Length: 460
Image (tube, rainbow, N blue to C red):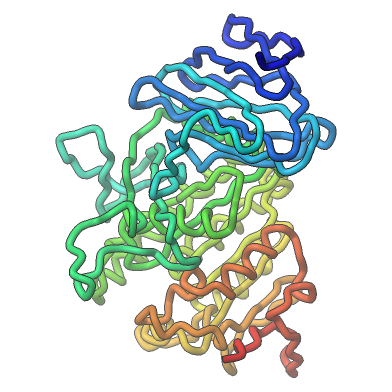
């Protein structure tokens, strides 16, 4: 008979549960309600033991598992975001830990927690072939009727924001920086979660529940933070949701991943480009309102912004409008402006205001960005995302020349920020507050116009 000792009682959702420790723990079971959060008592675990959490219930049950070290309260392990699957964790070192279970869904069900000794697993854990990332979204796109519950959005604007949650699958064989999808060259004609990044679901939430749900996710993150991605030109809603999930996954971001999707047409063409430019302008006050609510209603201590291409028009003007808002200014930390398709002179004017809103602003530019070259020819003036002799250098803002990054696999070389490990690695350290001088692939460049940073070409 296994030896075990009573440790503590935990009261959660009106029920009392017993936890014991020893060579093997008897299973801890209980029920969990919609959007509920449960915390176990502290347990002493030995290196090599294994913790398993199983959940069963309705289809909208989505239990997240977080493991914390007692003294430091450091997050030691967590389940894949919103994946309804068995959670299995091998204890790395002897210590005292506690678990937090959070139901991110509207369903109800039951859970079982079991700890087994090394080499004596209670059951076979079958790892799924994909992780699932939860992406919150806010959009001022018009919804397209599809006859079902799933959200579909078009490229036309509307006067108010809609909110919701997406679930995006990431294949276990995912390569950092890639947005895997079906390829005709590989005779792939439909999405496969084992191979591709797939938007599995997108459901609308009312505003109150939406911000409450983000607050719950923020509370569980180590730094109480939010990552907001604002896409660029020629991007439909589905692609934007998939890209947001990929970036958050590759960055190992443990806070709330949020997509702000403005009404891009999702097509390449002169008319589509002009429509996107108009819609980006119309979306500015909506993003101002959204960022203000994120700062005031979620408990986030850090809000990071990543903007790409034409999305920089929305972000830079929204940040300039936020300048008088001290609440937002205290929380916006890192702002990464990637390949900004905005007039360079206008960017300089706006930067004089918006650079004071964030803790830090970084501009990524490239002389190899063919999409920006086309934009420059259409507009007649340099773009802020261009490198070379027109590279934008502004005091109080870090400029990084990404021209040395290999972008040959991505066509117009306009998504290099997410399709290259070097850029993503740099964003990883940027979000964690490491200055350019501490990021290994960057080298200081001195010019008569001022100082900027450049990526060092990879050794081949």
